[in-house]
Length: 119
Image (cartoon, rainbow, N blue to C red):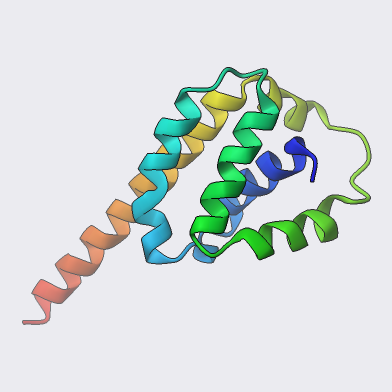
């Protein structure tokens, strides 16, 4: 699987399909963020491997492979937007992870508030 595909699929999941992640995967996202921070932007293969291992550990490995085959086999050339994402890979991924974690914290807080209101 091409590293660009892995990275772009993972970003797509964070932005468009966060429900794909199990609760334990959400709890493990900060660890992924830390591991990605240790990579340089031009190290797409190690970043993609880190994401792939994280996905495999969190039950998403098969889905990642299937998604790469299905969504991106005929994607053609990189668009300026996706090229920009891959130019600033580490920053883009870390920001997307942080935003997703923040959304999760807000949802959890809302659930707690609703639970407390019903008592």
